[in-house]
Image 1 (cartoon, helix red, strand yellow):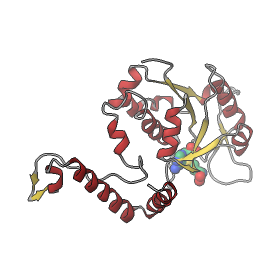
Image 2: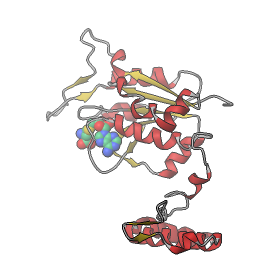
Image 3: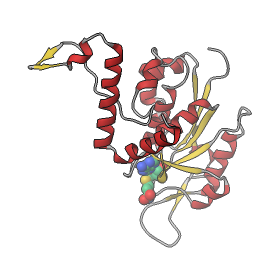
Length: 241
Ligand code: SAH
């Protein structure tokens, strides 16, 4: 590998959750080979009192606990300035901007990312304002912590780093690459439970295969994701392609 590894810095109360699934398969190999580097920061190490408390009850009342701004800011400040590069920092949160492949591509093209994982009812709002931290969501559901969302985002980014996926062409054709969902895929056996694979895929005509796949990608996107389809059409009419 040439150059510095892509940097992932994760602030969490559960550092033992990392690398977790990212220690296996493609991401694990890339981590071992120094394509990317993972630094986990235990937020509890930045607690100031003798009980090492990181959370407290919410002002205004209500259930649960809220992560303290002073402890979290100390963890963020120590991590952000480490190693020179000022990485973009995000807080994983159901209120955040939905993660998508465009964000993943942008992050993969940069030097790395810092991810703050919340627990309990979340974090004191002031730390997000004071440190200018944008929020990112994995989807419209509530997790018990940001760690799984951080792992999902890192998995998506790491597979785009140079040399991680063996056949980089596969990245150009997959879902979201061209603004469409992927076409259906088939492998052996050629007939299974009475179901043949589409004949065009056996024809050896590369252009016909390409057109069929393109047609299927459009049909599936139109049927399943009208939001993506509308954006795709709008982009096409703009570029005239
Ligand atoms: N009270 C909060 C939910 C807290 S869940 C609310 O109603 O919005 C606890 C932590 O899990 C959050 O601080 C956040 O870091 C993480 N989390 C929960 N759902 C998430 C999601 N969809 N995407 C990213 N992170 C999430």
